[in-house]
Length: 542
Image (cartoon, rainbow, N blue to C red; front, side, top):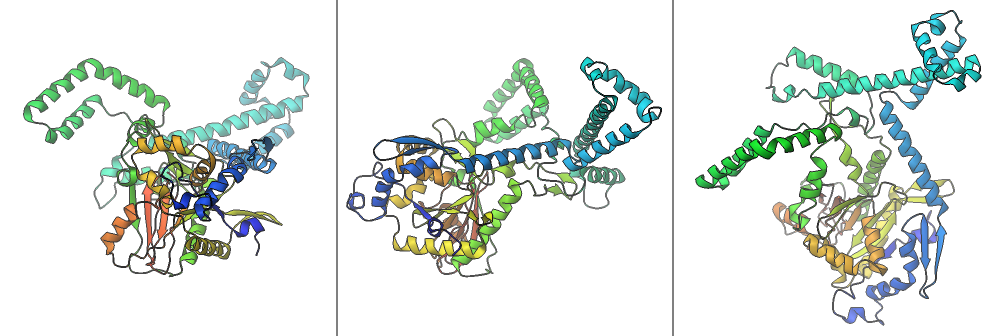
């Protein structure tokens, strides 16, 4: 086996419900079941609980002694990740040029100017005279050799010129994308002006752009006219109000337009000048994350796979394949190698939400939820659940040649071991239902979370579950007696206690070779599969 001793056995993590439910036989100190393990872990694994926090680790033992250590590998990987982020920001800023092309252009122009005769246009033309005037504004430069001053001025002029080309290209694309007439065309012959518009936009878009290249080219969200907004509001409430109430609402709208409406409209227009979307953060904070209703049916949505055909009945094999594909897609997003979506290969779409597809969770709060995205993914692991037991499976391991991703056979072997271990020692009743709290009312779940999940094994387990790249649920049920609608209902709620609804994307494999996907509006997937004992697949955090 290529794994070390610690890697052969997936780390088993258990929540402790001793504080949440009355003592039972499962909670006795002499119990040899999973709960006894959880109680022991509260002390013996306190070191691990602190260790996963970050680069500077706090270690504690059961005697109350603590030491602080620094993890150099994590710090180094975080440093490399920061350099990569900086490099991508520079590339997105100077696009359509790449750093290599930009450096080559600057170097070529500097070499041409420095080697040119002093009487040539390169050294004495109108542009050169302007640059010498700029150079005279820096007295300290006169102490430098002439060729060095010429090289510095040439480099500065080239860099500014290339940056100006990037700005012009982005401005033209933003101007062209403000045209929406193509959306209202009927099927048939395309007008000539639309063809020209599409052709110019495709040329400006270039070939093989990276994930976020077009973000700076997208137009801002326009502010609709005040009267149009009020008219649409009245149309939306008319079926809900009686005639006298509707007339009263019309008068209020007229009064709002005459008095305070123009002030609000002016503020929105000012906000739209410096915001990509004047609406997005308000909508996310006060609409999407503000509701206290359970997100299971009020926020999540679900999809199914093909109903007639499945590639395999082997649960561990199919789950390993799906996890490997999901991890590959995650790496395309992390390294921005995924090409942005373009409608018809021409019109780019906003790709901002792709970064929340993995390593993201929705955290409950008393007055509103928050979205936590763990941008620097240093561990790359997934959280796997079967029969109420949660496991931490690394996707990145270290061998003699350095770090590498797990292969398909290695992942399959991990899932087989998890299935065997969970079937032999499942979580006891009540402790296997921790995920049900995520389907509770948000403010109630927030109160329980603050009271019971802020220390010990519960805090450690919750951190492991939420910081995972995505979740894999290995379902043991076989809903063979359910029709398609019954399976869809099972997909939405599961058994009421096993699905972690705050994760962005979750897949699940049932014992019928079916694969399902359930998504928490920030990204979720679920799946069910026909076969023997089929697992749930990656559950991405919302």
